Length: 159
Image (cartoon, rainbow, N blue to C red; front, side):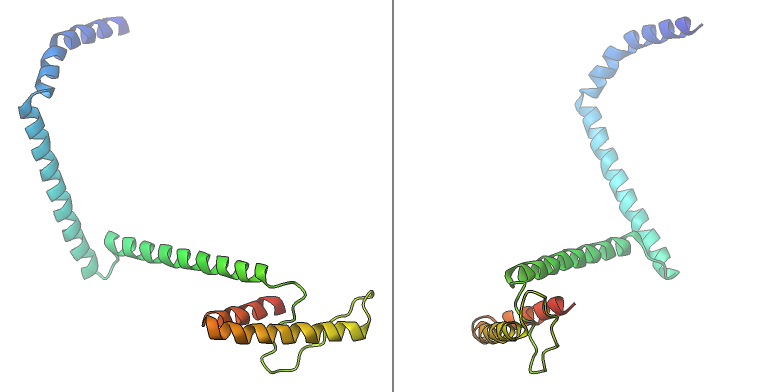
């Protein structure tokens, strides 16, 4: 039975295929397809506009609203990644032994290791703190973004 249907289809296709190929290659077919695409596009635009009005009437978000929100979220995501990279760059530049900025407040008591005596630890902390303060002062004159980076670094180091 299936063989009969296949034979019928093959006969029909061999009879119709040449004329269909000729029609598909004609200018009339191309014009028809172009007009059909324009009508379809115009219908879709009109439908979108009507549905947007209806949804806004009922205070519901339309596809264009969701698209705008997705673009805004993507922009915030890109900015957040940039800030994260900036934080990692700043943390990578600051040496691990540098004392955190105190901003005029008393420095917190640091934990001492067994291998270092208390006097050398406090001297090293004072030396690195004065070095950090002089670096901040020179950086604030040359680049206004450095003090914020210094505060950011201090926050990261204190946590």
